[in-house]
Length: 279
Length: 279
Image 1 (tube, rainbow over the protein chains, first blue to last red):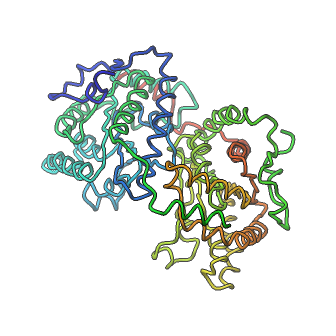
Image 2 (cartoon, chains in turn cyan, orange):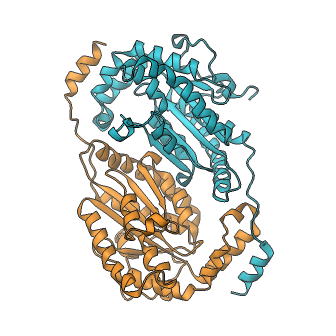
Image 3 (cartoon, each protein chain N blue to C red):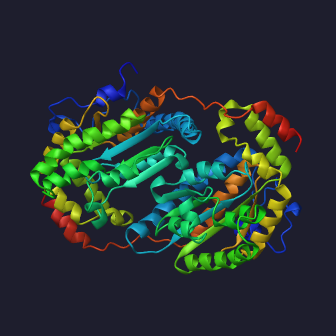
C-alpha cells in the first residue's frame, strides 16, 4: 500500500472519538469475504518474521522485541485479536498478559511495577490485554487515585514506554474503537447465546453507564500518550474482520521494518560437521 | 477409530526402545499428503473444546486443566509440536514452559518446586518443553544428584502427577521417539541451513555421545512413571507430519473425554437483558 496503515490509523490531536466511524475499513482494499484469506496470507509472513525475531532473542544477537497494547471498552475485541491475530504465530514466542484489577501486592507498588515485569524479553512478542493505561482510564473515571497522581501518570507512561523503545523495543498501541450501539448489540448477542454467558459480567453494565466518562478518559490518554516513539492507533472495531486484519497489518508493518536477519552462527560450522560425521 | 490412539501408543513394560520403529504411523489411516488437512480439521475441534475448557476455568465452574509433557532427544520435535499443535488453539488459554538448566534459586529447592509453579491453572492447557523428567534423565546420565536421590524421584514424580490428576488435571506424556540416525540427519540439515544455525548448540553433540545412556535412562523413566493416571506414550517421531498429527490426536481424545459443558450463567439473564434495554 502507498501509505502505511500505521500512518493512516495513528491519531492526530485533538482527539474527538465521536468523529471516528467504528465501521470504517481504512486501508483495506478487498471485500469482506476476502478478509480471512488476507489474514491467512499475512499469517504466513507474520509467522516467518516472528521466528526470525525469536531466533535473535534466543541467540542473544538482538534486543528487538515487540509489545502490542490492546485497549478498548468491553466487547471491543481484545480477546478476539489474541485468538485470531496472536494465534497466527508460534505460541513459544508469545507472552499474553491480561491485566485485571490490581492485587493487594500490586497496589503496594507504583502502577508501572506489574507492567514492567510483564514486558516481553528479547525476541518475544508480548500482548497486553488491557495495560498500564487502565490506571488513567478506570483510574480517572472511578477516581481510584488522587487527581495529581492520575496527572503524573501520563508522563510516567511516556517515559516508561520510551525506555522500552530506546532499548530495542517496539510498541504498537491499539485503541479498539466501537460505539455504544456496537456494544449494546454485542452484549445482547452474548445474553442470547448460552455458550457466551461465561464472557458476560454484570459489572460490564456498570461501566457502560459511564460510557461518556470513559470516552473522555480515552481521548485524553490517546492525546497525552501518543508519542513519536509509541503512537496510538485508533482501530475501527465495529467490524470484527476488519479489526483483526488491521491489527495483523500493523504488526506485520512493524516486523518488516525491523529488517530482521537470521543470527550468524557462533560456532565453527565445518568443525561441527566433521565432528558429527564421526558419530 | 476403533481403538484410541492413547491406548495404541501407551507403553507396555518392559520398555525396549530399540524395538520401536521411529517411522511408524500408528493409527493414521490416510496418506502423508492428507496429514496437513487432517491436522487443520482437528484444529477446529481442538480450538472449540479448548474454548469450553477455558470458559470453565474463567467461570470457576470447573477445575479441569490439561498438561502436555514433551520429552525427547534434541531434534525430536518438541518445538515443532508447540508451533504446529499448540499453535492450533487460542494462545490465551495456553501456558508454555521451557525447562532449562535449573537456576541457582531453583537448585535450592526440591526438583519439583519449579514444576509445581508452572502447572496450568483451571481451564488452561499447559505445555512442558522438557519437564521434571529431566531430573531422572540428564540427572541420571550426568550424575547430577546422588543415586539414592535419583531413585527417590521416580515415586516422587508419580505422587506429584497423581495429586494433579486427582484434582481435575489431565496429563498427556509424550516421548518423541527418534533414532540416532534420525538425529544425525536432522543435525546435519541444521548445519547446512544458515537459517537454522540459531537452533544448533555445540553441546548437543556432547549429549549425543551419550545416546545409549540416555536411551536407558528414558526406558527406565517410562517404565517407572507410566501409571494409570498418567501413562507414557511413545510417539514415533521420525516423520514430522505423523508426530504432529499424533500429539494433536492424543490431545483431542483427552479433551473429548472431559465431556466439557459451557458454564451456566451465574446471573439473571432476563434481568440483564431488561437492564441493557434501558441504556
